[in-house]
Amino acid sequence: MKIQYITQTNATDIHNWSGLNYFIAQSLKSQNIELSYIDSLKKNYPVDLVLKKIYTEYIRKQKFSLQVDKRVLSYFANQVHSQIEPNTDIIFSPSTIPLAYLETNKPKVFYVDALYDNLVGFYDTCTNISEQTYVSACEMEQAALSSSALAFFSSDWAAENAIKNYKVDAAKVKVIPFGANITENRTLVDIQNILDYKTYDTCNLLFIGVDWKRKGGDVAIELTRKLNESGIKSILHVVGSEKLPYNILPEYVINHGFISKSNAQGIKKLNDLFASSHFFVLPTKADCSPLVLCEAGSYGLPSLTTAVGGIPTIIRNDINGFASLTDKYIENSLEKINFYFGNKSAYNDLAKSSFNEFESRLNWRVAGQTMHKFLKEL
Image 1 (tube, rainbow, N blue to C red):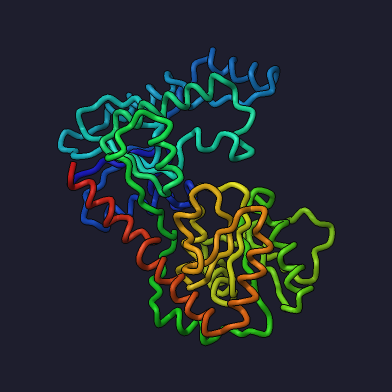
Image 2 (cartoon, rainbow, N blue to C red):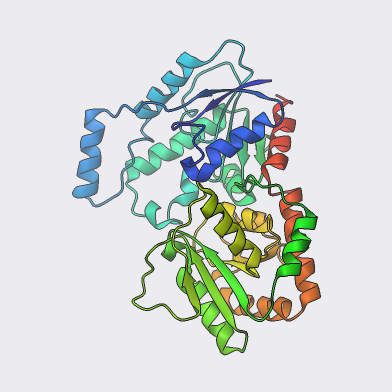
């Protein structure tokens, strides 16, 4: 099988889109699929469109996207079309953008965590959208869905939206959870060693997130405060931002700042934090498929998060953590920590089942195998 892999940016850059472009490509390669790249697509924005963006954003105070306009999308599609190799079997992209208006007799397949209308009113960055942008974006998604042979989504939430809101054959919509963007290959023996070295004098909570407000950093601090007040000595370890929105941090919060995975020192520090923590906490207000939940599972670290977006596809309650309603997050998390932190045997079982969820569902090896199974049927 020969696949041409289409991305707007450099497909081999592990830092693009949280590494997803890179890891999705590697998961396909792991199935002995021959992959060639059409990437780093050039942009061409018509002058009248740029002027419309300026007017809409500065005068009407509404958000306006250039890249969902049909002329821009057609420019992307033409670049792709000119580079398709005759012996290609499938055109594949981790985005609908370069495929939406691509005309080809080759089967098209895309793999995403959401469609545009999933995000409108869900993320703060996708509120107050201009009507032209919204209509163009929905037309783009409709064109991609209608003309593709398969549509892979990382969650039931995103897949159900595609089936409900677009005229699409449900048979070609498939749910394949994203994997953890890691290179280590831990085993159950490694997880047992991690558990053997954990101490239980203090409950260590780990929070990772650059967008402090959206990811619910303030809620994570409040949870830690209430744990300490209840008699469970707890520390919240924060990763993601050098500066938090507090003049003075509580003594039970340690800010480790931004830790890069691009060097051995950063990788070791993150490994140590994941291994020494008892729970990963992510009281996020809006998320599609946060990869860090899969990554936590690779350490046997249970997650306490919210049941928003595609998270219920990743977290199964009392199997690899717990996903609460946002307004019940602190209450439910206190209950879960009280039970599991006070019962080492139950905690170890939860940790091992968290790793099993990663090993059986939430990794790129399984994602690659699942994609290959469906691609072979085309």
